[in-house]
Image (cartoon, rainbow, N blue to C red):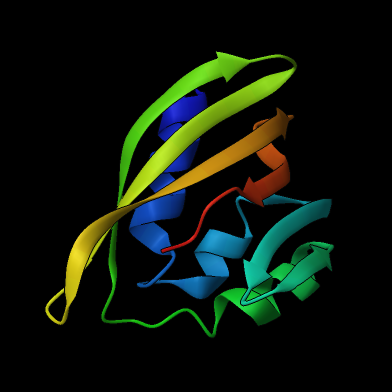
Length: 108
């Protein structure tokens, strides 16, 4: 289930923001960095607002996903015509089939 959820996130993040946001619970937390700033988005609506700004020309693919503690660790492959392929490492927890907490550990 966890790899399937990460795969859905990767597939939907640049194609259907609404469906991607629906992968998160109503009270989910999404953590990422922008430069030196740690960003935290709480709740599906707040997460949706952030996800709509992800550049559409980047392609995301789930690379791997393994159990880690009470959640999962995984990686996403990112590619675009003007960028070298990169990996983005993530950690997340799932509750009732949706992301409860999603953290981007490294961002290219």
